[in-house]
Image: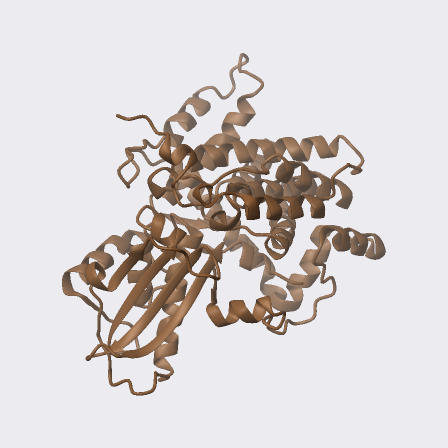
Length: 464
């Protein structure tokens, strides 16, 4: 199994990888199908577009800006290249005109008020995040139709692709890599046989695919992460969506800066630095800014916060170490996605912030000199202590409890790395077993706690 670091860390926009980035990617894929000229038997000339959102995409789609994502995607825009500052204006123009103008296709009718449906009935059978896109001729006959599932972290599959994967015949042929581990046990065994660290094995795999461009692309991922932190530390005001959540990262950062150099500061102030870095990212995400899935948007603050903590607060830190941190983190994220899920709509927030904490803990442990066994242990500790965490965003917005949850996830990640470094890597629960527990817990979790905003914190807000 090989899942690239750039599959785990994708540059995109907020507020959600599964509810914003995924539907936008699905819409862009649908346009590609239309450009190929394929159409249903008996269909006439291409005239208009229709979309319906199902399951979690319907229940929390408004708060996650899924409607905007579909509109932008049907305009031919992609999350990694879209300027977030232009999104609102593009959406407004489509709502005003009732038309989209995708490149390589005629102007197509699409009135979001009537052609974009939030279906609150049963979810589609393949996944909790379902999306149906249709193109019609001027008589309303179906020109082309496709079912997509946004399965977390910006990954999108069609209904056919999902069925093939379930039958064990859906995986595309991959370029052979020297260390194709699909479990943590295989990863550790390959490390013992080769004498290489997890970072070295992951680098060797990535270089087969990305060659000499690898370091430049890793540096670009960190550049976007760091820029997101810096922007989040300077912005003030109220986040969009109606909850009237106030941005706090800027004020907290100012307080921390004013206390630098003082002799009398609390020893736990380091936690405040980690928290403010994570909150800065997730406030930007909530505002629809540019972020990096880590492994999702809802958990986008944990890995950048721990990486920034490493650079600013750890002895012997260097910027080249960020590359290894990202490589190791992506190795862990790939194992979790392959063997369980990173989708909050599928397994709850244990799959988002829990996965992010495991990734960050492993990456930090590695760059601080941890052995492969200590790195695996760090990931397991962090994931184990997020098991059972629900995904219950208030009003479907990635704000409460998501922003603070990222801050605490970063703190747990650093604590897990530190605990592991104090030992020799031996521990009771292997990471593979912990990932299996997360999958089983998610399977048994009630749907109201899996990104539908029908339970938990989402329905227990103060009445004011």
